[in-house]
Image 1 (cartoon, rainbow, N blue to C red):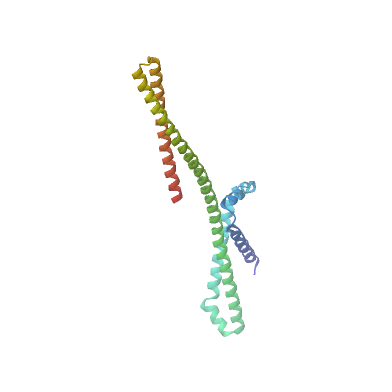
Image 2 (cartoon, rainbow, N blue to C red):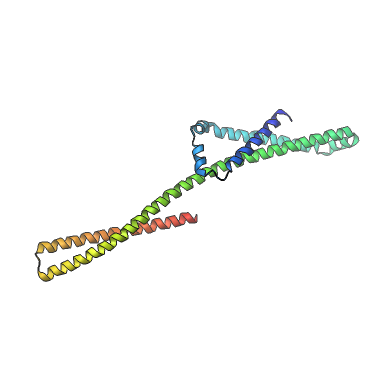
Length: 218
């Protein structure tokens, strides 16, 4: 095996190891995202795209060269010469075998190189989705607590409103001073404003719950 094909084979073995490590199930996407955010990757990021496309071009050139070699040694002329001389027959088949081996090595290297980049991209996207889901879940939990508090406040407001109505009715019957009646009307207006605010909180809770349900469906 020549030097360039030895380098391609080592590159293929390295790709297999890296892809297997990336596919380990008990390492979460968040953990991989924290690894990808190391400072060393930020230093290498300006050169990463250039290196990626350079490797693709090199592997494509070697792949086409391997295809040419396979076609060269599987053509009719080498086979005719091989039939005439047994030693040439073994030599031609050896060359054909090496060409096919180089073709497979280069093809799988190119395929795994593209797969590895795609796996890294998907892990980053999965980590972002998990972070957004956790944030939305925290918002929904906060909204649920606010809704429960709203229900309790609404019950208290109904009780206070009922008491205010009774007191106002008693004021009108017993002819309380006008200042007391004005204060009761003012408190009734405040209760009405709090009731509108509670209604707004309930609508906001329903909206957040709907968004959480849509995110879970996605």
